[in-house]
Length: 138
Image (cartoon, rainbow, N blue to C red; front, side):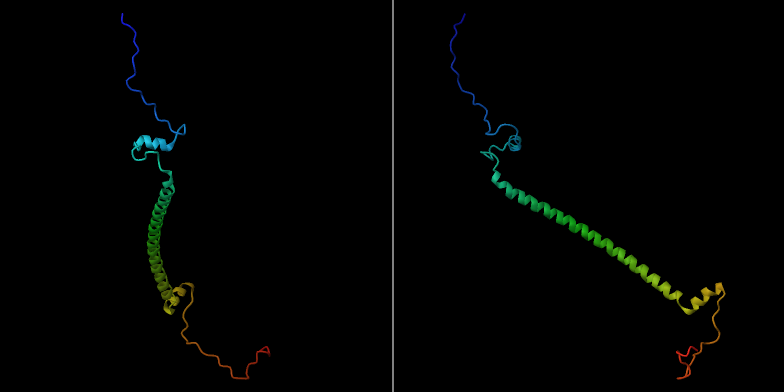
Protein backbone atom coordinates (compact mmCIF):
# COMPACT_ATOMS: atom_id res chain seq x y z
CA UNK A 1 0.00 0.00 0.00
CA UNK A 2 1.16 3.43 -0.79
CA UNK A 3 2.12 5.93 1.76
CA UNK A 4 -0.01 8.98 2.35
CA UNK A 5 1.82 12.06 1.37
CA UNK A 6 0.84 15.66 1.45
CA UNK A 7 0.27 17.05 -2.00
CA UNK A 8 1.00 20.73 -2.40
CA UNK A 9 -1.59 22.71 -4.34
CA UNK A 10 -0.24 23.81 -7.69
CA UNK A 11 -2.35 26.90 -8.22
CA UNK A 12 -4.87 28.52 -5.99
CA UNK A 13 -8.29 29.03 -7.48
CA UNK A 14 -9.36 32.65 -7.38
CA UNK A 15 -12.64 33.23 -5.59
CA UNK A 16 -15.42 34.76 -7.67
CA UNK A 17 -15.34 38.51 -7.65
CA UNK A 18 -18.13 39.79 -5.46
CA UNK A 19 -19.71 43.15 -5.99
CA UNK A 20 -19.90 45.69 -3.22
CA UNK A 21 -23.67 45.42 -3.24
CA UNK A 22 -25.33 42.08 -2.79
CA UNK A 23 -28.43 40.94 -4.60
CA UNK A 24 -29.83 41.61 -8.05
CA UNK A 25 -28.77 44.64 -10.07
CA UNK A 26 -29.83 45.73 -13.53
CA UNK A 27 -26.36 47.01 -14.26
CA UNK A 28 -24.80 43.71 -13.17
CA UNK A 29 -27.19 41.90 -15.52
CA UNK A 30 -26.23 44.25 -18.40
CA UNK A 31 -22.53 43.77 -17.72
CA UNK A 32 -22.75 39.98 -17.62
CA UNK A 33 -25.06 39.61 -20.62
CA UNK A 34 -23.16 41.97 -22.93
CA UNK A 35 -19.66 41.12 -21.63
CA UNK A 36 -18.87 44.73 -20.86
CA UNK A 37 -16.15 44.13 -18.30
CA UNK A 38 -13.55 45.16 -20.89
CA UNK A 39 -15.37 48.34 -21.80
CA UNK A 40 -16.32 49.35 -18.29
CA UNK A 41 -13.57 48.17 -15.98
CA UNK A 42 -15.07 49.44 -12.75
CA UNK A 43 -18.71 49.15 -13.79
CA UNK A 44 -21.17 51.26 -15.72
CA UNK A 45 -20.27 54.97 -15.52
CA UNK A 46 -23.37 56.40 -13.89
CA UNK A 47 -22.28 60.00 -14.25
CA UNK A 48 -23.16 59.85 -17.97
CA UNK A 49 -26.80 58.87 -17.36
CA UNK A 50 -28.22 62.43 -17.05
CA UNK A 51 -26.76 63.32 -20.45
CA UNK A 52 -28.01 60.08 -22.00
CA UNK A 53 -31.48 60.57 -20.49
CA UNK A 54 -31.60 64.17 -21.74
CA UNK A 55 -30.61 63.06 -25.24
CA UNK A 56 -33.26 60.33 -25.13
CA UNK A 57 -35.85 62.87 -23.98
CA UNK A 58 -34.94 65.19 -26.86
CA UNK A 59 -35.21 62.30 -29.33
CA UNK A 60 -38.68 61.40 -28.00
CA UNK A 61 -39.81 65.05 -28.21
CA UNK A 62 -38.47 65.26 -31.77
CA UNK A 63 -40.34 62.11 -32.81
CA UNK A 64 -43.56 63.29 -31.13
CA UNK A 65 -43.29 66.68 -32.84
CA UNK A 66 -42.81 64.98 -36.20
CA UNK A 67 -45.90 62.82 -35.66
CA UNK A 68 -47.91 65.87 -34.58
CA UNK A 69 -46.84 67.81 -37.69
CA UNK A 70 -47.78 64.90 -39.98
CA UNK A 71 -51.18 64.59 -38.30
CA UNK A 72 -51.77 68.34 -38.66
CA UNK A 73 -50.86 68.27 -42.36
CA UNK A 74 -53.29 65.37 -42.94
CA UNK A 75 -56.04 67.22 -41.05
CA UNK A 76 -55.45 70.41 -43.06
CA UNK A 77 -55.65 68.56 -46.37
CA UNK A 78 -58.86 66.84 -45.26
CA UNK A 79 -60.35 70.20 -44.26
CA UNK A 80 -59.35 71.73 -47.62
CA UNK A 81 -61.30 69.01 -49.43
CA UNK A 82 -64.28 69.57 -47.13
CA UNK A 83 -64.17 73.35 -47.69
CA UNK A 84 -64.15 72.83 -51.47
CA UNK A 85 -67.19 70.53 -51.19
CA UNK A 86 -69.03 73.06 -49.01
CA UNK A 87 -68.15 75.90 -51.39
CA UNK A 88 -69.54 73.90 -54.33
CA UNK A 89 -72.73 73.14 -52.35
CA UNK A 90 -73.10 76.81 -51.43
CA UNK A 91 -72.71 77.94 -55.03
CA UNK A 92 -75.27 75.39 -56.23
CA UNK A 93 -77.79 76.30 -53.54
CA UNK A 94 -77.33 80.02 -54.17
CA UNK A 95 -77.91 79.56 -57.91
CA UNK A 96 -81.04 77.49 -57.22
CA UNK A 97 -82.33 80.13 -54.81
CA UNK A 98 -81.69 82.94 -57.30
CA UNK A 99 -83.47 80.96 -60.06
CA UNK A 100 -86.45 80.17 -57.82
CA UNK A 101 -86.80 83.85 -56.89
CA UNK A 102 -87.33 85.07 -60.48
CA UNK A 103 -90.78 86.48 -61.23
CA UNK A 104 -91.55 83.90 -63.90
CA UNK A 105 -90.63 81.00 -61.59
CA UNK A 106 -92.69 82.41 -58.71
CA UNK A 107 -95.71 82.82 -61.05
CA UNK A 108 -95.30 79.24 -62.30
CA UNK A 109 -95.10 77.86 -58.74
CA UNK A 110 -98.14 79.75 -57.37
CA UNK A 111 -100.44 78.73 -60.27
CA UNK A 112 -100.97 75.40 -58.51
CA UNK A 113 -102.70 77.13 -55.57
CA UNK A 114 -104.84 79.35 -57.81
CA UNK A 115 -102.91 82.62 -57.81
CA UNK A 116 -102.37 84.36 -61.14
CA UNK A 117 -100.21 87.24 -62.23
CA UNK A 118 -101.92 90.61 -62.48
CA UNK A 119 -102.48 91.79 -66.04
CA UNK A 120 -102.66 95.45 -65.01
CA UNK A 121 -99.50 97.26 -64.03
CA UNK A 122 -99.32 98.63 -60.50
CA UNK A 123 -100.25 102.25 -59.99
CA UNK A 124 -98.86 104.81 -57.61
CA UNK A 125 -101.04 106.45 -54.97
CA UNK A 126 -100.15 110.12 -54.78
CA UNK A 127 -101.26 112.13 -51.76
CA UNK A 128 -100.98 115.85 -52.08
CA UNK A 129 -99.60 117.81 -49.23
CA UNK A 130 -102.30 118.73 -46.75
CA UNK A 131 -104.87 116.15 -47.97
CA UNK A 132 -104.04 113.54 -45.38
CA UNK A 133 -103.24 114.27 -41.77
CA UNK A 134 -102.36 111.15 -39.79
CA UNK A 135 -103.46 112.72 -36.53
CA UNK A 136 -107.05 113.25 -37.73
CA UNK A 137 -107.69 109.52 -37.75
CA UNK A 138 -108.92 109.34 -41.33
